[in-house]
Image (cartoon, rainbow, N blue to C red):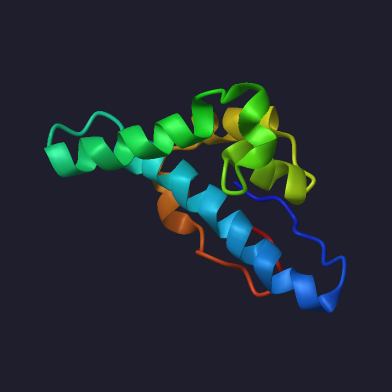
Length: 105
């Protein structure tokens, strides 16, 4: 799953990379821990899945770390990221680096 985080200003680029890494980690957790029986892995999957896929309603604008708000800050479509996440395989997740030096997440 790749999307480009374009720097608006050099001072804010690191923060955008961090926010994008949050989305990426949640997407990876959804894929890597799907169907696991161990409680700790099911809990990780459930948290990531709920964060990515549960709609929060109109109060989302007040939640800085909500998935939808982070997508807004990164100028990304939440539904497109959700679709890309569901298309990922465990092999896809394992081949990507955590953060690309050029800002691709």
